Image (cartoon, rainbow, N blue to C red; front, side, top):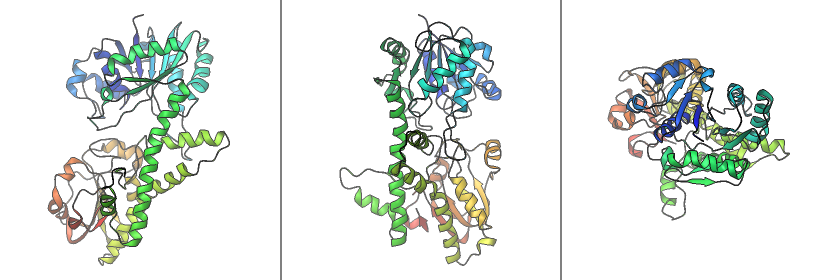
Length: 421
């Protein structure tokens, strides 16, 4: 069978995958409901900055925001976001919406592969029945289901799609062979055939949960050592001389994966009557770090004789990680909110963040170029290359002579900043 593949969701996951499959000789349609995003991609512009203009301009794949373009596709790969709601429960509406979009175009032997991060059971127990209801076809008989969790790491060129082993799973061995035939040419690093879809779903959701907990542990170290008057990074450096000490560092845990995925696992666990303790404790620790940073800044300003109600602070960076425009679930917003709660005037400087996106999502704006000698305090919140290349002298020039410099990313040497996380 000559596959015609539709990739639904052209973000950090879907776009690189669609382009890679197209380069491997597949007939690929990239589909997204964002009309403006699709129009930009057709012109060679990727707002996520993950794919170059040259790659977009040279691809043979098609882009569309019109659902009718899905007609005739044999494979539907769903790579839409899986966020959480205001009470930290999974929001599967993007997945459900994608299923509703493709259902009219399912035919005999269609294959639906979910790439989004979900809790075990979503592919077969939610997507399958929904597709059956909307299409009139039978899952496992008329159309087949597969799962291959994304392992995207925005801004990381080293661990790109083709350089990371990819987990694949399907309803049956024959379908798994078909899934393998699709992904194998695109992933030189190799594939791991999971024994079931639920196993693959579980594997994905614990990858980021494990990282979240490791960071939470180090963040708790930082909270303890702060009360002891110890420098956390110096303690970690000393402990790191042991061969099996893991090199995690304290920091803000945001983004659309690490700070979100654990809640998918805990939600399902609680449905089954088990209340997770360690995972949720880690989430509480990581979610409080932004407020901790802001409160340390306020205390530092007071110690320097500044009145917080009259202070002006520059927050350097707003995206959830360095050299990446993604502002989803950024915990820098917590720092800004907490500082404003003390009546501090806050300027945000981030050359990567999209101004319109910040306004829509957070009601915040950025400064294009901060003023020199204007700030009572400066927080290095994100280690963008533009900031790391400045050096302490240029950064301090943005503040008043007695300004407080808080380097939460460890960009500068200890002697060059007033506070470190």
